[in-house]
Image 1 (tube, rainbow, N blue to C red):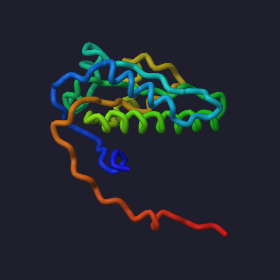
Image 2: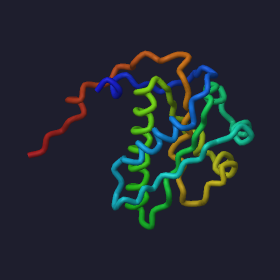
Image 3: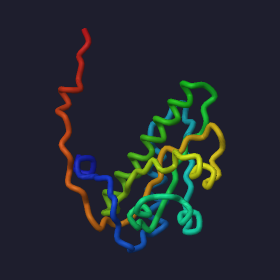
Length: 158
């Protein structure tokens, strides 16, 4: 509960490196996300400095020392596409919680949706860029934002 309630989308990071082995460990743990028919529809791109320098982003992903692109593989039907996207979103949440539990912050950027960035990353047609994920030690941890009471979102059916 603590990890869920205290995780934030970090926008500014310290330059301190994050051990590659730890990132790989969190990615492996993330792979236990629910996924329809065990398709494991996620693909991860570890974005190096040359590629990163070409991605237009207002603050260079807050100076995070690691930048990942997380993709969702194509589905053969619209339902499969949605199932894949949902599974990759679960994968990302697992990854972010695992990192947060060890004091490492993450963000979630939609900058990968642009055609320019898709081309730069070599993303094939039909593959979705679910997010560009900066990873690093937070320089600033944002305060929590109020959430609507869950009862306002709950509808009971007979």
